Amino acid sequence: MYRPQITVVDCTIRDGGLMNKSQFTLDCVQAVYKAICESGVHIVELGYRNSRKMFDPEKYGAWRFCDDDMIKKVVGDKKYPYTKIAVMMDAHKSSIEDLLPKEKSLVDVVRCATYVKDIDKCIMIVNDAVAKGYETTINIMSISTAPERELNEALQQIKEETKIKACYIVDSFGNLYSEDIDYFVSKYQKLLPGIEVGVHMHNNQQLAFANTIEGIIRGANYMDGTLYGLGRGAGNCCLELLLGFLKNPKFNMRPLLDVIGSHIIPLQKEINWGYSVPYMITGIMNRHPEEAIKLMMLPEKDPTKYNFRTFYERMLDPEP
Amino acid sequence: MYRPQITVVDCTIRDGGLMNKSQFTLDCVQAVYKAICESGVHIVELGYRNSRKMFDPEKYGAWRFCDDDMIKKVVGDKKYPYTKIAVMMDAHKSSIEDLLPKEKSLVDVVRCATYVKDIDKCIMIVNDAVAKGYETTINIMSISTAPERELNEALQQIKEETKIKACYIVDSFGNLYSEDIDYFVSKYQKLLPGIEVGVHMHNNQQLAFANTIEGIIRGANYMDGTLYGLGRGAGNCCLELLLGFLKNPKFNMRPLLDVIGSHIIPLQKEINWGYSVPYMITGIMNRHPEEAIKLMMLPEKDPTKYNFRTFYERMLDPEP
Image (cartoon, rainbow over all chains, first blue to last red; front, side, top):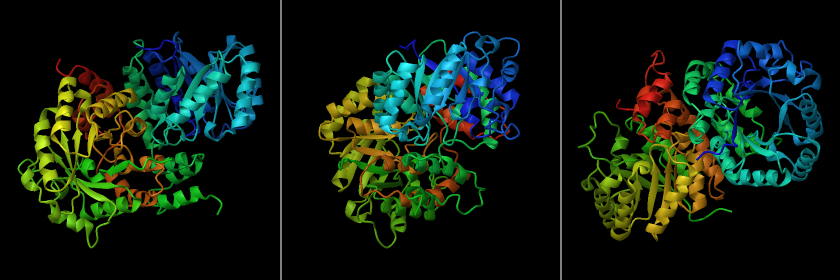
């Protein structure tokens, strides 16, 4: 039996954009948008609404900024009525000036990603977005390294100072085990009454889908997935797996299968995401995947590329 | 805190052999053997001890038969004293004539893989092996499709008629969710007092590692893994992830990292294992992965290779 409160969010273009500087073709984003809408998924996130002052538009693609004009091009003649459109604003890399009032935009949901230390910037952004008419969520990144006291204070602030719909546990490093999910979901539920708990998981330890299920079992009602797991490093919870697990009869797997075959698999030639030993190592060690991504990007012939032991020792003891 | 009762089994060469007709080079098997022993893993399975009457030695490699002479070549001058050597006998494809008395063999453990329907053959094999001096386990395959009443009867027989050390839940199709693991572990514990529960998981839904952890949490003490997940179709629980999770201070990750880099990653050029959409589809639909493997083996240029929807419809309704 399915739980009607569950909201599924596709963030393929947004999280995948961390692997290609958000340089997807318009055709690809249109195909993803259409497939997600036709699959019955509740929210599709088309990219970041980040600031051009922080990201050079010469280097980053359109989906790092998600101008309302670009979103219009994605949607085309008619917006699917059921699936809401989201953009993500990084608390420390975006500006409230870049957000038009809701009635002038096709965007429905603003998700603000933040580190615990930036919670005040984040609250300013979501409160501005709510005032402009948007639904909002807060996505607390790198939760596996957040100091407990600061996290508790941030959650307290969120409860007292915002009107967000959901607050996310974001396992940026792919470090968490199921027992950690239980711990954080319980904490959020206790400290954030009336606010839904969300889970956004990374696959460094091949636990992104399992931890998402664990979140569901514990009562989280917002969950992120991406097509074929496309996302930073080891990638995310696969949306197709999530739809296979959830029993909501409104969901339709077929459009997802089509777009994975036509648009996502071909991206593997340019973007190398998914489980690999270096990501496992950073995940287990609770570290940002950037060093693992660098190793993965070395050419095949580089003799250090598959010297996993050296990488392991370096991660164990980064400043010898 | 680690649980000293836990026994970890590496079955890289055995399960991986299902993807290459057990045609690994001696060098590769030697390297895997050495790495597993040096990592502190308890048991290393070097292949099948199956019958030459069922498998043509012209087509299948040495590790489908694991003659004692071949095992001697793997071990070389000195056997590592801590790590036991296992072979797997398929209940329906092996012969007790092929098993020498323990004192004439380097093998320590005989694992008998069986479908529920072949339980009598299986019991004959393990009882013969026990009489010859080996430790034994029974690995009940395709448990997700086993008729409940027949499974219960088989477990009853195992309890009454054998002296095995452990009985495995084998998720051959990669179909099970954590709640199913809980169900089967409880059933085994109830029906098999004094016999350890084992878990052997496949990764069709990216749940092999998570389901292995779930087994551990519920009290299973035998668990299978393979290097980098090498195994049939979507592959198995990654041994490196398992060692990262278990806290036994005797374990050493480094030899595993070395051999994955030197011997397992290069196999990816010949063997295509790991998560992919066709395996997800057969996993969700609780079907054998053979049709998915056929699809995965099509050349890149074949237009049906990435037509996942057609495959999905065919799996939904195999005999229209």
